[in-house]
Length: 324
Image (tube, rainbow, N blue to C red; front, side, top):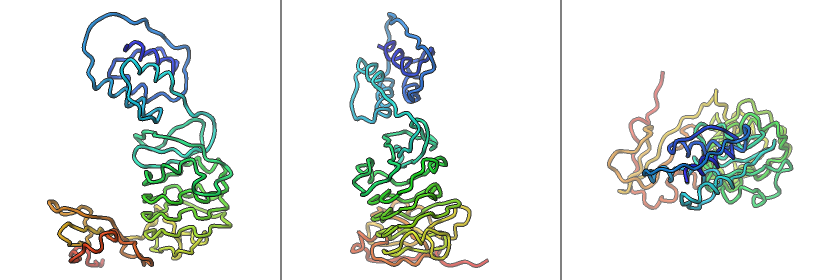
């Protein structure tokens, strides 16, 4: 059985290496559709011994990480499952969902990630023509799983001109990195509509080519630009800048100051510069706000859904302004 699993791995990678049982899960995770040559095929031997369940659990987890399925596999089913793996190959723009909640965009030959330790859960080709609605995006069903979006440095080479609806309805999206890769996009209509958790759009050297971007930030009640600007419901692509009325943040020039908001089960809301809640107290909700932002809509507060539970507010001493 182990020989069958090892043979299946070698068929997929075209290798001649041998694998200890404890090495097989990592070998399955390393498969990417590239075959080095003619695979070595071992003849099953005879012998006795006990293989830990953890070994087979690891192999099964690796298979599921590769095929994106929720299937369970007996040891005898693992070799056929490995042989059935298929890979997304070819030079194209992709949106790649990672296990840490990142949606990564890149343009390259084959499915891969630049995020350290990334485990790819799913991937979709990005249509160069863009999308006419949020529901037309192939990753729409995964939108609530995404907390961060990253554009890799090669994405702009794909030539995406229409970025409309790209993150429409991403309710748990907190930050976007590498937005400069969209400098060539001309249409950005409703790009971030209903992204109430979005705080930051990081961009290093963005130059706008956008000619349309209606309702681009509608429902982005927590978005703050690098100089403290909070967009209005009707703001559009004109606010894609780094100035006093801009929503972008340059990683090298971030002027924002953040504080934490902790609502405890006893009804006390604590506003503090501390990053962690008080030990031993039951937490109802938490989040952060920008001290030098002028928020302009209802519902931006992290405790808003529990506002009726607030009985007292403490502004911690560490919130006092300092001078140098």
